[in-house]
Image 1 (tube, chains in turn purple, blue):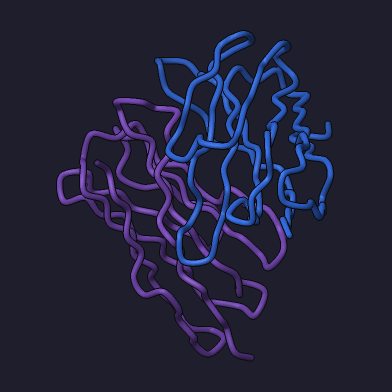
Image 2 (image 1 turned 180 degrees about the vertical axis):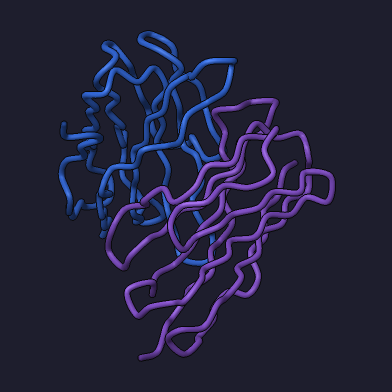
Length: 113
Length: 116
């Protein structure tokens, strides 16, 4: 059974720092991996999607990498801002049962001004 | 373009009552799904659909029914509400892209349900 783990559960850093959020998964047979942002009381907003054949994706100050063989993905946030404060979730689409996404429990990020 | 729309946003039910959470998408996506989000449990899949007329169970289907009579709509029915169904419910949709790959997932804003 696929399991997704995100460490740390919470992270607090001063504004301007570069930071890395981690996501690990137990089964490397995945279609893709997606990173989401969730603000309190809101839905999930997609940040980056990495297909299984890709190594990384970039959008603005965000860069996500994928290492299928080791079962790891990282989300790199450059020059963090208070507006980046949110919970970040990763989710994997397994090859078997591609509609059954498996989510990590998220990292709650706080950027202090 | 409204995306994925969920109604109601907030609902309080008494134990044993039934209700339907509505979900509609206007993007012509073939795949739709329902998740619940609970503290410490993350998001868990309840039911999903790969097209009109086709539904299947996810990780936590008990106590819920779904149907997909059109591409646009995917309602979630609570048959006899229980306090354990107090949660935030999210509807999501996605589609197939070229080369057999699957798209990003689009989520609704969520429905907050409390069962007393």
